[in-house]
Length: 296
Image (cartoon, rainbow, N blue to C red; front, side):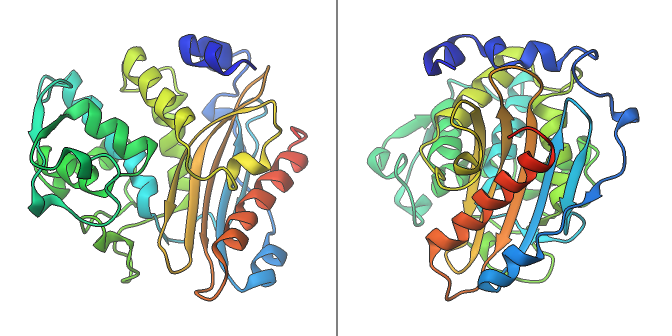
């Protein structure tokens, strides 16, 4: 698939097909998740892996530790951008509103906000930087702009997500502390479907398309889900990394034709394991899942 045609016309990804019941299995027809044993991958490096693959054509869902909690790290930034778009749609925010960037806002990993220090960035620029390059101060500024953590909790509940917890700002949210800032892989996959696939998504088509464009354009995580998908597929995804083992990636995989596949992968690797090996676990789980679904 030509990358530029994807960005200029997202219908080429099969999004129009996804909205037609003839090509996408309805929720009522989706069977319970099938156990997808990934214990061998976990044993290889001593990690814990939560994984879901949902084939939107057949309705099949593969899950391993799908109901267990994992710290989500920066994968939440995709949902933060969606929540901000909903505020724009409600008239509570404007994409062109400028937000000052101050020294007090600076935390680690600020590729977009640090160059703007002492100036201001638009809400849209903060969203783009949050999704594409996972800028931490940008995420915090967006959370503060919506009124803090409680509105983000309310966003998840509005999707029908009663599980995901929201407790801290960046970068504190990445630390393991009980159930704080955690999500279940099955819930994450359901949220992706609700926002990016369902015909009754709360996002307008232009906002959904813009979010997908950022998720496709991100340069992060090329060795995770993208490495496990066939080269001809287009992957719209958001990564998250804890720096001490957690290595995550969530997104929608679009084949050249046919319905897409949603993948939510949360790998809590051992602290001593090299980052590239943690990424390889997600890539291998994705390859195995697509093969089992007959989509490789």
